[in-house]
Amino acid sequence: MEGIQKLKCSSCGTTFMSETGMAKCPSCLEKESQGAGNMGGCGCGHQH
Image (cartoon, rainbow, N blue to C red; front, side):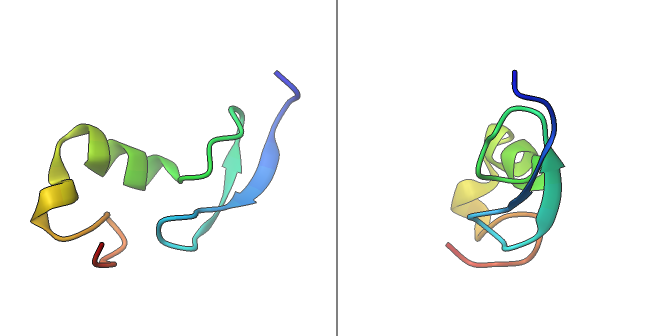
């Protein structure tokens, strides 16, 4: 772990703090893990 980084979500563009270096914000990851990808996007309302 390199500590907390300020990143921009590759999915919705939201700036967020990440401890893992993941390119997606927690809300997008949570939606994906719930299988919401086939329901029209992430929690930020973007279509994929």
